[in-house]
Each structure stands twice: as C-alpha cells, then as structure tokens.
Amino acid sequence: MLRDQNTKDHSLRNFIVSFNEKDYPPINVRIAPLKTFMHEHSKEEYSWARLNKDKCPCCPLNENRYCPAAISIASVLNPFRNYFSIESVTIEAEDRVGRKTFWTTDLQTALFTLIRTAMFFSGCPVTEEFRIFLEDLRPLATEKEIHKALVIRFLLAYKGEKKIAKVEINKRISDLHCINLSLAKRICSNTKGDAIINSLVHADAVGLLLAINFDEIYQEICDEINTIEQSRIMHK
Image 1 (tube, rainbow, N blue to C red):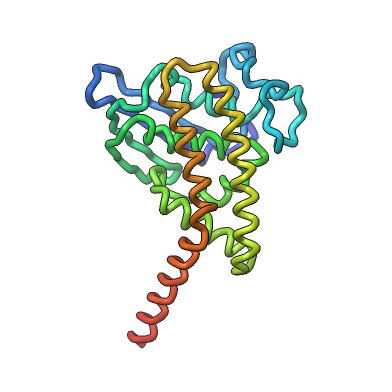
Image 2: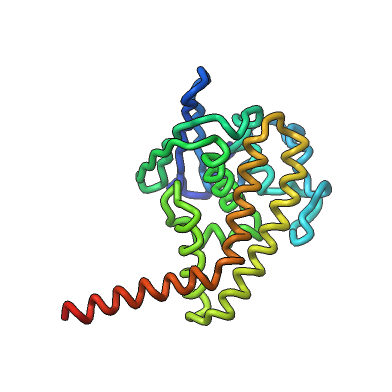
C-alpha cells in the first residue's frame, strides 16, 4: 500500500493467518491506518471501486473519486478473495503498541477483524467516527467488547444522556448499514470465494445488533458501575 509521507507510521497492525487443515501458505497482512489504502498496482485494477458505481446514498464525496472503504478492503483483503468462509484458521494479531492476540476460528470470523479495521481506517467520512471510538480496542475484540466500547464512548460524548446517545448510535449504524450494502455489491462482483462477503455480512450484523440491544447494553454498564461503587464503599 502507498503511504502518506506526512503521516507518522505509529499505528501499524499486523495480522498473520495460518490455515489449519489445508496446505496453504500463511498470509501476512500488514495494515497502516493512514486514511489511504490505494494499492501499488494501477488504479485501473480497482475501476469497480469508483464512486460513480454503486455509490452509497449517504456518501458526501465527489463521484470522480474512488470509494476509500472499497479500496481499503481490496488492498487489505485481496489475498483472501478466492477463499471460503469455512476454512479453519489460526490468526495472530498485533496492534500498534505491540499487544498480540491468538485465536483459532473459521476464516469468515477471522476476516471480520480485518474488514472492520480496513473500513474504519480507510478515510471514509462515514466510518471515521467509529475509528475514533474503537481504535484503542485490542485487535481481536469480541462483539460484546465492541458494543460496550461504543455505548460507553457515545455516552461520554453526549454527557451521559442516554436518549441522545441512542439516537446518535442508531443514526450512525443506519449509515454504516447503507455502506455495507453498497460494498457488498462491489465485492460480490470481484471475488470467487465467499469469505470476504460473509465477513462483511458478519460486520453488518454486529452493527445492527448494537442498535437493537442498546438498552440492554446500557443497563449492563450501569450495573457494573453500581457494583464497583458498592465495592468501593464497602472497602472504605
């Protein structure tokens, strides 16, 4: 991937995907979240990613440009375009401060982490706020961790006002769902395997579940805070 020379290279993430049941070589994906993921190959290779084709209705960018989220996904997940979701893999993920996480799962679930990172660090103006709220999570954060992190950060952003935070989250999830639908059209026409498209469906479902379960997650956070406060009082 090309790098912006004016941006400090301090946020690299490294993902190594090893196949457990097939004699495939490991795939090492290094991601630099630099708001541009244009691959070193010719732009013509990504003509399908131009904004004049399947542009998201919520996109504010000029149609003469390329979709940053599509370019990012293509650059990061291109090695997996011919693989299928059910492949058993072990993933090693290292974030920008050197934290490592290992996980054995299916390829679709493993690529959920990659596709989330690729989208949120792409420079897409719609996913940018998710990047700000999630950039401190460990690389292989669970769905529950992602949901709680988003609810907490939206609550902080809106001074603890639950109703406002819920409205703002639902609005952003709706925009993200719109982006996922448009990306799915692009990806389906440019991949042979189903691992990438299914990981995008997985990512979309995680977002929609957040909107559905906001109240439950909010109550869980409140209960945890109350438990901590009671413990603090008891140990005074």
